[in-house]
Length: 343
Image (cartoon, rainbow, N blue to C red; front, top):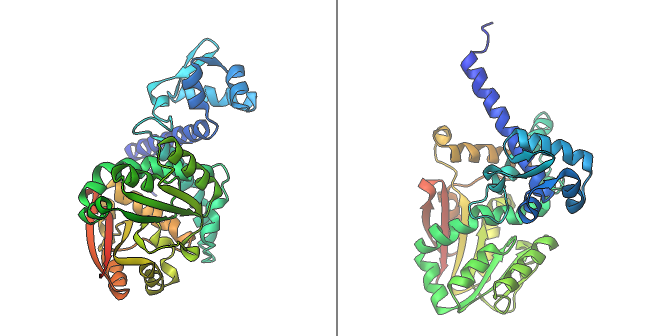
């Protein structure tokens, strides 16, 4: 048997260092260590442990490792943020926080895939609630990943949504998370009102706080609910599902689309944003974004889901009486399919 090529071995070892660095970042983010260092400046381990209300011995070992990986600078007994550490601040523009969260989530889901592969078990969405330290960060992670992209790249290329926003109406976001989608729509279109539904009370509270902070609370409401408990007091002009349709696809595309279309007012829009699964999976190796999508699709299988192709979404919309238009973004790796109801 031939030994592992030394160059390949070195490449894999470098990748392992990246995994460790992102795992350290995850610990720092979820315990607010980067944010506290940013707010208070250089601190000793004892000072930082008191601020963060964490165990000092754990924090000492984290600080040693974070300094070794370049996240922190050490000056005697005090630690401060380096530019790399600042990159993981959750609120900094272009934050790398989602990358750290996704890396740890990928490892967690990899363990689940390994466990279930021999049995074929697919336990569903409940697995997302198992890592308790990740759950509170889902909303902020999605907002940091997709909020700026939506405002800067996606929304300007959706003339159907722009026209609706200019004349005003009611938008409903199913699985709204931190409310990032509706907040950006409302900020862009002053005549638009919105209702966000989410299953997680923590997300609803975050969305309400953000809307109040941004002066949008008079036009946006957030409450508990989902696709199956979707009830509003008037016809809806826009229903949005952001990276959520594939989570309910297994329930039956016709049933799902018909239910959504039934809530739309005449001329209303169903706006679906999804990763675009390629027609030829052999192309997944050609782009880092597609490689990430391939891994996430494996994780989605644990949850009972799979990523969709544009033709699948379009066909389901037509069957529900909607006329679809597909817009591609990020060099074809992302899709927004807009279905218009006649009237």
